[in-house]
Image (cartoon, rainbow, N blue to C red):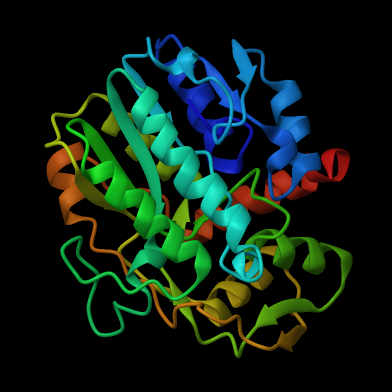
Length: 299
């Protein structure tokens, strides 16, 4: 499993092991967007693991795997501007090499950003046109095209994942840390952008289902909550959970950031037997508890 030091990958690899799978964790923590956090997560893993730079290393350790869950890559719309070479290397070149090395099924992590600002008027379906609007989104479209040419691949389009362990650059992490410290919450834009916020535990469940499900090769599947929520509404909910009145500090909107993401998870239900189960209020409470109990010791 690649990307095992990441926010989603670390939870997937542990859940796979708990489910009885024989797991090899693969990552290059020092190339992560937040290398300090990735290194701490990596060092804490007690599973069999190997450090590999997927864009340059010998990938023979992947050849004997029945399934490769490929979650590694360089994330982030905002951080992708000006980092096009790194984005292409870590998201496209690495994916091409993983697909070539793998001997069995490959489950590839993609992103709702491939749709651009589709989903304004109705939920986005997998057969909707792709309209990437950032270097990150362009790299994900390219990685998908590589994956969907292979005979036994499943592409999972994750929608705005949050929850315990979230990277420091991600919205709910920044909002929660600011609110707990009594600082203004940094919001890009006016807070009216809406997202299908999806708890990481739901994402883990969908990812593990894709490992064994009878899915036609090259299928892309949305993994997202079907109810979009505006950033303002989410911040209000966070404030009620914390019993504080958040002070918002607005910054310029991020180029390429979609106005709305809105997932139609019907295909995931039909092919994976998956539906998201965690409501945003419960998921935010879960993430806040992590910040209160764990984050101060590890950030």
